[in-house]
Structures are given as structure tokens and as C-alpha cells.
Length: 267
Length: 292
Ligand SMILES: Nc1ncnc2c1ncn2[C@@H]1O[C@H](COP(=O)(O)OP(=O)(O)OP(=O)(O)O)[C@@H](O)[C@H]1O
Ligand SMILES: [Mg+2]
Image (cartoon, rainbow over all chains, first blue to last red; front, top):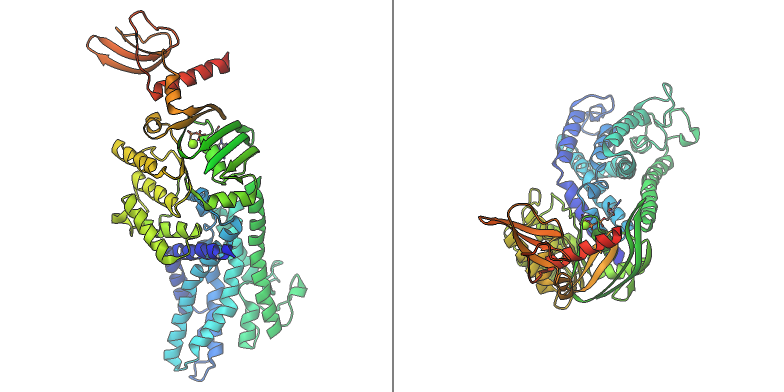
């Protein structure tokens, strides 16, 4: 298929442009740094200090510590990506090229999402490197990567779908405000206070994946609340289901945007 | 690539931009003239496959632009410089050209790199090829615009006001470059600068209010003002009749160049028209028939 190469070209350059965003690197560095320095009742400081603490537990604690706040930065950094071609007036030229809007959308998604995840991955690797030295356990880096893939990456995909598409309708500033509000309400607020999806399979903070990796419920996974069918026991299969649900839910807005854009062109 | 357009209409909400355009272009450099809002950009965007035609027939090189597959076929052979071209500020011209080349399907990386370097040289951007485009001057942006359009050696070039805002030397360099490219290609050039068309095109069309009011040779358009172009001197007041093309103050009074069907004053002398005179005579005739 000729469309694949063109999609990869979009992906390559959208990646390049996003990864050059200095504000993204600075924000992630500051947030990750302050999370690492702070005590939030769940961070790596709560992992057993003994040298024999399992790498799986140590690195999962790092991953879910980061996943509490870093996805907010993902949303902020991605909110302008699809709007940008309109603002920079590059949309006209792109529309005169053979790749269709579907290929451009897919390429933009893949490129900007991987670039947005890069600083967070770097933060995990720094943490893993630190733990390797501190605890002398060579398994820290592999488990750091696994925890990133299970906890942070699904959050990134979920957030990206909405952060790319919603600003087309809402404008980027309004989306950013609403998104921060959503993050605290939908991930951290307890259902006892207000009806919220906190602790369900559809919680991008990664409650289920982190609970499964740790072997003990964390981040309110499975806490009673509305939509009780989305709140099973935090087992391995529930964690896998949560990851799949988050990824699919993140792709829905992209599919919708793809269909609508295709129709606008001929309107 | 031959262009054949019949009965093309396109509106945006309540604004009708094109109201029944008929146009035939057969290769070479072709000028598209017309006032602000005449519909030039809309026509070019349709030909570039950026927007769909409303009604009517648009065929380019035999491909039907009203179908998606026809649009794709034309876009594979197209170089387009939009009137309002945006660039990515974070990329360098070299990277931007590489990106456009990839989008146009130039997959062989060695050939792609060679072509990018060649075009950077053609438009004189080699010196800044690695610099980010943020802060580029108007002329530098235009050069990037032309270079990207030439990638992939397109059979059809559509350039929408490429010389707007350029200094005279740069403008002449650009139009000469475009004319040189028109050898084996179709180059469609829209502009407000009649002189650019006079210097580079054999054929031209004039759009007014969404319709083609003239299409044919540049020489014939110039002849439209034959016998109606006058030169005269007057102590101060401009002539009442006709359209004043130019007014030059002299010690003896002001010298006017006037387009008018009748001799505007007894001392006026008939002079040979230029393309600009022909264009103005056509517009004048069109507006008087449109009103009357
Ligand atoms: N996207 C759009 N939405 C609404 N109206 C539009 C749009 N594009 C063009 N128009 C209208 O269509 C008409 C033709 O515009 P167009 O840009 O094609 O003219 P033009 O000949 O290129 O003018 P100029 O010489 O100023 O560039 C104008 O009345 C313009 O306002
Ligand atoms: Mg225009």
C-alpha cells in the first residue's frame, strides 16, 4: 500500500517537530523531579528499602507515581497538534498532496504521541538507572520499561486521542482547562465524594495495571462507585482489560475525526 | 497537462465565488488575471484538489477532479504554491523539502536528497538550508514555496500570486524562473501584476466576479485597448471621461494616460496600448455592460 509510506512520512516529521518542543521536556523534567522529591504515600520511598526489594515492585511504584501527574502534561503538549496546520496555514499545502486526511491523521497521532512519550520514558529510565545503582539490581531497567508500557503508555494513548481531537471543537485553551479538571475528578477524587470513574477500568492513571504489577490494590482500583461493572477485582485479566479499554477509548475520537474530516472535504 | 473546465460553480455559504467558469488551457505558461475576490484562488484550490467543485466539469490531463481517484491522480503530478503559504517554523528548508518530497511519494532516499539539494540551489537557499524557518523573510518563504512545488518534477504547476510582496529584482527573478519551467509543463500563474503576465505568458484569462470574461492570447487582450488609449496634457484637472492609467506631473502641466472609447479631449493623441491598458479597457467594458 502506497498510503503506508506516506503515513510514515507524516509520523516521522510530526515526531521530529514535537520532540523539539523544549517546553515539553522542561515540563516533564520539572513534574517528574518534584514527584520524585515529594512524598505522596505511594512513591518509590514506600518500596522496601532493603537491597532485596523486587525490581518489579520498585519500578511499578515509580511508574504510578509518575502517572498521577505526567499525563496532564501529555494532554497539554498534544492539544495544539491538529490545530496547528490550520494556524500555521500549512493545511492548504498538505491538502494538495496525495495522502488523504486519514493517513495524515494516523501519522500525526503516531508521531506526536511517541514524541510526547519520549521525555516520560526518559524519566523512567533515569529512575531505573538510579535504582540500579542504589540497589545493585540489573532487573530495574527491564522492569522500568515494562511498568512504563503497562501504566504510562495506555494513559498516553487514552489522553492523546482526546487531546488531539477535542481542541478542534473546543479550542486548545478551553480543552486544557477542562482536561485538568477532568484529570483530578476522574482519576483522583473518590466516588464517595462525587460520582466519578476513579478506580475503574477506564481510569487512565493506571490503577488496575499498577495493582496487578504490585500484587496489591493501589490507586483505588476496584473501589465501589458508579458503573460497578467497570470495577472488577484487580486481577491480571482485569489489568489487561483495562489497558485494552483505555487504548480503544483513546482511538475512538480519532476514528470520529477521520470520518468527519473525510466528509468535510467533499462537502 | 491540458485543463478543460466547463460550467464550474462553487459557493461558500451564501457567497458564490465561481458562477459558471469555462476555461481551456493547453500547456505552457498561462496567466490568470482578475481583481480582488474575482475567484482566482478558489479556482486554483479546486484544480489543486484542496476543495471539491460545487457543480460543473473539471478535467486535468484527462482526470476528472470531481472524483476522489481523479483528484489523487492529478495531485501526484502537481506542484502547488498556495497564495497564503504556511511553513513549519521548527523545520529547516532542507527538512521541509524532504518532508514534502516524502508526501509526494519520492521514496528513494538518495534521489530525494539529490533533488532537494538541487532545488535549494535553484531557488538560492543553499546558504540557509539548515536554519530553522522561523523568522524567514517574505522572499525566503516564497523561495521555499517554489522549491517545494518543483519537487517530483510535476507536469502541472499552480502558483497563486507568487510575486506578491517581492522587491522588483526578486520578482523578475521569480517570473523568469517560472517561465523557464514552462517548457514541457503547464504553469498556471495568478497575479495582480499585469506586467508579470505580459512578460511571461502567451495566453491568459481574466476573471471577474466568478466568471471568465476573457480567455485567449495576451496580444489580443492588449489589442482590446487599441484606438482607446490616449495620452494628453492638462493644466490640472484629470479628464472627465475614461479611466486614468497614469498621471505624471510636469512643469507644463500633468500628463495623463487615459483609456476611453472616445477622444477624451481635443489635444489627446492616440498611443499604442500595453497589456495593462488592454486589461483596464476590458474591465471597463465589462463593468459598463454589467451595470447597463
Ligand atoms: N473559504 C471561504 N469562505 C467564504 N468565502 C470565501 C472562501 N474562499 C473564498 N471566498 C469568497 O469567494 C470570493 C472569491 O475569493 P477568491 O479568494 O477566490 O478571490 P481571488 O480572486 O483569489 O482574490 P484575491 O485577488 O484577493 O486573492 C470572495 O468573495 C471570497 O470572499
Ligand atoms: Mg487569491
